[in-house]
Amino acid sequence: MVVTQMPKLAVVYLSTQGNTKIMADAIADGAKSRNVDVEIKSFYDWKPEDVAAADAIAIGSSTFHYTILPPLEKFVDNVVKVGIKGKVGAAFGSYGWSGEAPHLIADKMRKGGIDVLDPVLRVQYKPDDKDIKECNRLGKDIAEKIKNK
Ligand SMILES: Cc1cc2nc3c(=O)[nH]c(=O)nc-3n(C[C@H](O)[C@H](O)[C@H](O)COP(=O)(O)O)c2cc1C
Image (cartoon, rainbow, N blue to C red; front, side, top):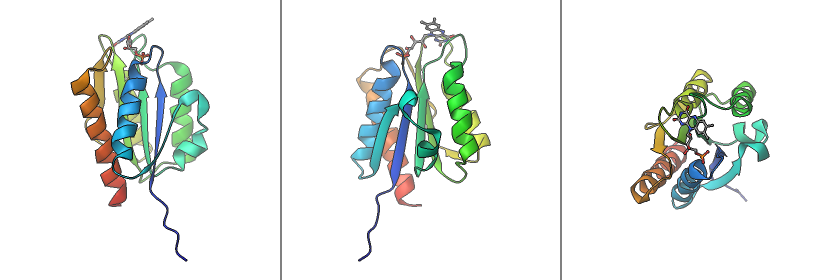
């Protein structure tokens, strides 16, 4: 018997007040609607090697003091170190006024050889219905990309 496994998306987020988590949930919902296996957790609850084992990796963070919080930065570096070459990636996050974190995450992922999809999604403060639809769309795009690999 041949058992075919569904491709897997790992969604990782850092969210202090829930704004980036709303985006993460909407990306996960979009991908689930296209029949991929999705696991979504705060970065505190992920092991870098489990993230790196997925077919696609979406990492989101809000911006603090014009950058990524150091624990998440270290986590992303560790995921890249395990090896993510040739996988599908996405970066996202809520922000207030400058919003550097999602682009910094995307840069780190790209340096690790992962194909980061456009757009790097940024939402100011709490996502509205239109933002949530964009996150759903990104989740669907990730799913289509890993299903066609
Ligand atoms: C102490 C502090 C520092 C912040 N620094 C920045 C910043 O440098 N640039 C920016 O765009 N937003 C900044 N923000 C705003 C947050 O990124 C924003 O509130 C975001 O929606 C939080 O999302 P979260 O609930 O997912 O953590 C800061 C917020 C706080 C509380």
